[in-house]
Image 1 (spheres, rainbow, N blue to C red):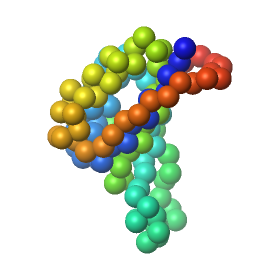
Image 2 (cartoon, rainbow, N blue to C red):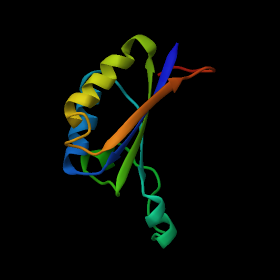
Image 3 (cartoon, rainbow, N blue to C red):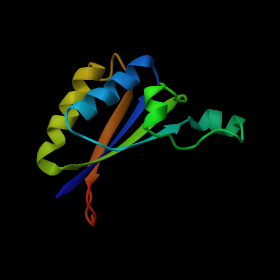
Length: 110
């Protein structure tokens, strides 16, 4: 069964390093730049991009936070979590969090 891991990270220079390390271990996913409710309520520039691509990752172009969605085989979920825990030093070096849930109705290929 597939699992979906959601990762929310405060953006720092080390965020790119984390995403790169996840990729080196053979995982792939989608990354969205995000902002807090406080900043969303205060307003944003209407010309801001709401999705980023790999070129933005290479240029370290993030907003306040990054939200990653990674679909992974259940038997590899703990490996992915271990990579994240190691690189974030259990979320003490890089602030953020992660959670996972089953992809009950998954169709497609990655």
